[in-house]
Length: 512
Ligand SMILES: Nc1ncnc2c1ncn2[C@@H]1O[C@H](COP(=O)(O)OP(=O)(O)OP(=O)(O)O)[C@@H](O)[C@H]1O
Ligand SMILES: [Mg+2]
Image 1 (cartoon, rainbow, N blue to C red):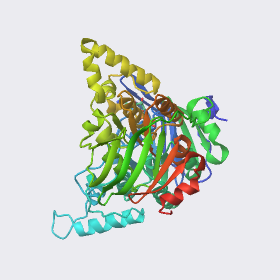
Image 2: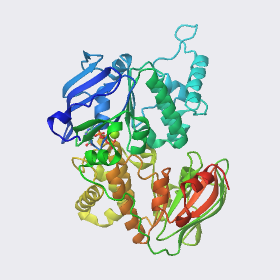
Image 3: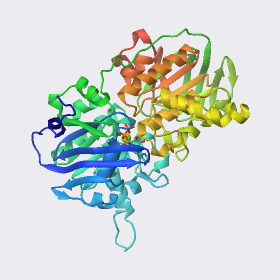
Image 4: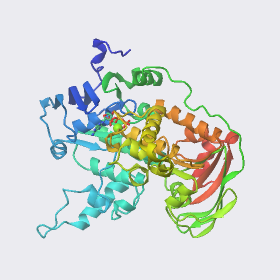
């Protein structure tokens, strides 16, 4: 059993495969944060090695150091037994170290194909000119191979989050790598896409590539990984064979304690409708949508990626227009034409897309938290800044946001902690209707239940919640009622008591 004693600090012996990359005694400090402290980690040929830990534990930092994107303060990295000096991402890649970043690194105004081949475009017969034909064909083959059937010529800015993830994956795996880090690829994928990714991982594994797989979903770890390394607070806790460990042990290593029931749903008193949608249509996206969310309710919106759930959220929030139908708030028809108008009417959108709608990355935790409700603070006149600090501090505590201070720029937080700031921002508004789009994406197992408890508190307070989620246990665990969407339509409504995984999947794939 792994503890922090000395003999447990050495990675457990793995069955087959040479060590291809090993990191020893890695330390990295940021102002106010010890991100990594004497961490040991190794990857063998042909293994999938899970790297797990709570939000802010240091997983992404360790992988960025491996891939040359962040420089270590001290420690050693050996590739095929040879020490690596401080290298750039470009050098790392040329040595066979690849990475799929948690926060994508794509150029939005270039096509998927151009992004995949950025910096190594195939050249044609005329010197200096890119052979676009070959590039598009090759990119299309890579995407099709991943079961991502969209046109490789499309601009990245027009792709969904899941499609962008597929571009990242195609980009990283199209190069000849010995080791590849996948930093939470599954957070933005649904089951179908995840299956394609796992197929690809098995192929890479067979050809001897060592894969590092980061995920907060332990089921995935048990399905695809051979070994698991746990980090806590920037420290190495242990490395285990998957065969020799179990879910409870991994959680204990991650959080240092036992966790209770993850989804503690508390039903609230259900009152009048907050939101009613009648026959709403947006050509090509949404078709005849009818739904109701009452105060006191959590209403789940299930479906596969591309079913139109995010699209519906954007229309309600005034980010996109609609062609026909009606939206009623508290029984009165309204026409919401911008996100600002939606906010003024008491609607909040906790989005899956942190970069576009969710956060201003260059601003601080404090500024982001209070951004959507500055009115409230300006009304308080001269005490504003004091009040603002108190509010920011309260949410940092309530959501256990891991940050050295509220003056930290959001871009320096770990992925999961950024997601918590998005939540804080909307919790601080007086939104009576909150739309949660994949609210716990990238959030660790311990913080998840804190967010569920917050949702319970919100509805107990009389607010209404519409929750989009691709995680069925979350939808089934937290919703009072569930609507299921497929190809822009609502294919069914299921009461909490009647919800089964099979039933929802049946509706989500178009069954009646
Ligand atoms: N550029 C930076 N400047 C300052 N602090 C940073 C920076 N990058 C990371 N940190 C801090 O280092 C710690 C580790 O962050 P890291 O991103 O490695 O966590 P993680 O394990 O990947 O978490 P998550 O599951 O949320 O993605 C966090 O406290 C984070 O705020
Ligand atoms: Mg991370």
